[in-house]
Image (tube, rainbow, N blue to C red; front, side, top):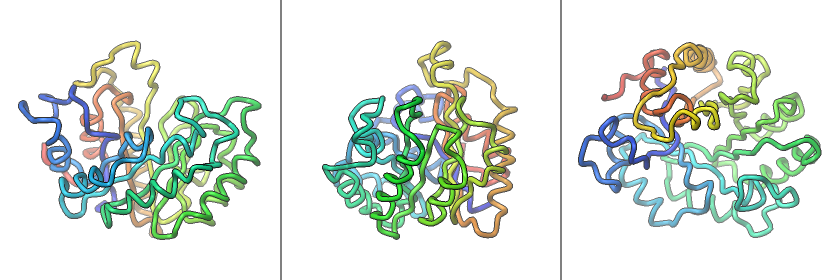
Length: 278
C-alpha cells in the first residue's frame, strides 16, 4: 500500500490549531507541521488564482523529500470566470493563457508536483452538453505537456460514460472519483471504469450545504461517517492492488465530517497504509 497517499484539501485552517497543529504553531509553520503527518496535500487556493513563484518555492522548501502537492487549476479555466457559477462561453476557452502560466509556475515544485486538478462545476440542464464539453476538454488536454499529470472531476453523472472515459485514457488523465451527493457510491464509480491511467485520484467532499447547517467551525468531527468511509477504503484497496496503478491520491476536506485531519487518520487505519505520526 506504499503507493497510497492520503491527505487533506488545504492546510491553512486556524480551526485546526490545538486539535491538529500543536498550540502556538504560527500560520507560516502550518505546512511544515502538516507534512509531518501526511505525505501529500491538495492545494485549494490555486483555484482562485495563480500562486506567486516565491510562494511555490516556499511550499517546496517547507516539505520533506517525497512529499507531493496536487493543485487545482484556476477557475478562469474550468469555470470561464472568477465566480462559482460558470461563464459558459469561457469554460475551457482560456483566451488569456491562464493555464499555461499556471503550469509554468507550479512546475517549480519539481518532483513534488503530483498532479493538477481540473475541478468542474455541475452544469445545469441546457448550460452545457456533453459533446461540447468533451470537444473543449480534448483541445485543452492536447496542449498540456506530457510531463504533467492531470486529473479531471465532473459532477454530471450522466457524462461519466465511454466517450468521457476514453478521452481521459487517450491523454493518460485520471478521472476523479468523488464522494458527492450528485454521484453514485464509490464501488459503483469503480465499476463505471473510472480508473483511466497509471494513477488514481479520490476526493471526499461530503455535503457542503448540509454540514454547514450544523457547523462553520472545523476543529473536530461533527458527523460520524465511518460506514461511508469504509466503502472508500475498500475502493482504495482495490485500486491500489491494480498492477497498472502506480500512485493513488486521496484527499478529504472539512465538509466530509467536520475535521479533515481526523477523516484522513481514520482512512489511513482502514486502508492499512502508512501509520503517520499523530
